[in-house]
Image (tube, rainbow, N blue to C red; front, top):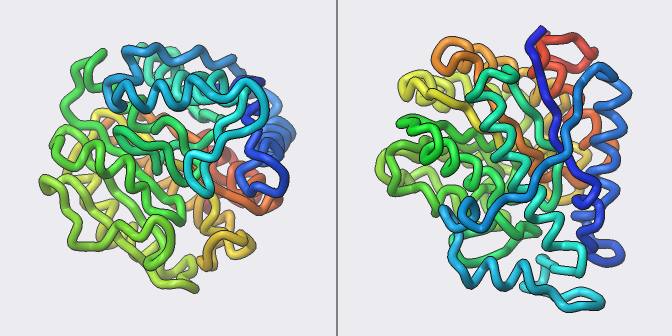
Length: 314
């Protein structure tokens, strides 16, 4: 079994998005409960706060001011879907800080892989805008830290959330040190991620139609995206792990099963073992059906551990 550290923080539950908002604290609670039950031996570490300097590698001062200065009471909508509340600054700092700490741990050899069970999610946040439930771009902060702190020249970001990670792509599309690979549903929020969006040759998008199931998903990764990852020879693999492609999720129309997420994770483990000394950091993104989210996360962590939880890749 691979060594795995989990990163989370109670403050991530205090980001209050309001009644009936799909990105709610129960999401994280369901993931933590399911993963704890399935893998009681995982060591969990409280995520530190990201520093201002770490955030400013990918965001500008205006966004930091917006996120870190919420109203003293109630909530403020930054757009129709994205909310800050009194508990949001600490949650956002801990979510971004989890990825930084996880990168440090895998790069220093303290663990093989890490799973960051945090919220708010991050991959829609751009340099200067919070959007799509996302405040800071957690995976981008992690990638920039790996590049600057450890001098890496090849960091891969794998994004299998059903929604395109427009913020991550925009932050790195002109930086050839970062490869961004994504499958997502075509024609839905954030209405980006077309196949002809190539960045500096470091972006590969595979939009799939509504109704796409495991066969189409696996084919896209097997025939297009995994070969691109292999050719890149990453020194570190980062994963935006969104489980909203599950057939039960109300926010999109993919037809995936937990086993599909487990299969892809197993493939990423093999590529990371070959090129990146096994180093993988995974960060939770979307997933809005609590049962599907929990099962997807368990399948994902099972594959990260190379253990059999019944839904992993076999």
